[in-house]
Image (cartoon, rainbow, N blue to C red; front, side, top):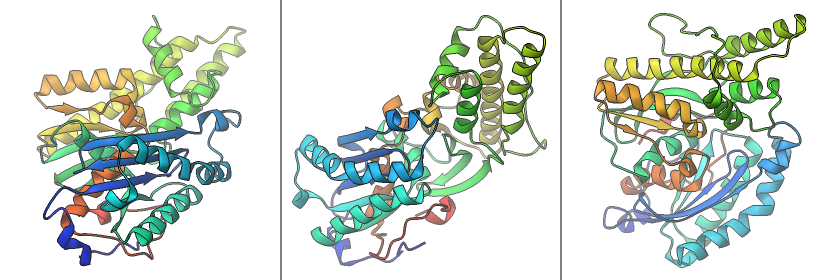
Length: 355
């Protein structure tokens, strides 16, 4: 990883004296986003251009197309973000950018744009971890109380992360196969929903009157890891069983059974981890955090445990640049800037990125 831990000449004008005005860029997958954020909390603009309509015809994200769309959009989105924020490039104190993890071609577009701006404006560059961004999206809506436990649920990630103090990440559990979002999309295809299928499955599950009970994959008794490939196979097996009998599959009951299995496992493990590690707060983050069933169940369990819960609004759950600025602000205040040889990282350690 190409980030530098050393302070630069910019430190004297950094957050040690005042709140930094950061311009952040996020291009890790299929959203092009630029935001202007002051002090890691005050969002002046957060412009997002989604590529969903482009990728829907292929049933998922096509990396090469995503990269091309970022190239087409980045300058326009940058100009819109500055205009909406009411600031000029000369007002910017630092450039934050998603360094990884993500699609390498997509990441490269953002990294090149960020490095160019940093060099041209002579302001610090801060390479930022995508998952740190999702976690610190919660800081845009409230104070994070440490130690905190983050349940990260997105299209590419399902993780339980312990935040021992600000910016100190410890990975407690992760998925061993599909992430939650991937499992939702695969099941949605089996239920004949378009991409992205998660919201359709959530809606159908909420409306269902019956439930086909599906297995829960708890893995080893002391494990905080996840596995959803077996659950996806169980859904397909139920569909095939119905068709072999000449019956129409009960898609709504299947959607409810699938969603209940996912929710029981992820919330159950998160609550157990919070107890074991003495968390004072629960954070829900990532694109699947917009799922109504998951939000409701986790809120119910946290209330029963007397554990405060933070959940960003839906617009801050999906990939966006404001969350990248919120995470980068921690390094801004410490003068931990990146050098111009920063490289995009398709795979990147959250623990190593810790401040």
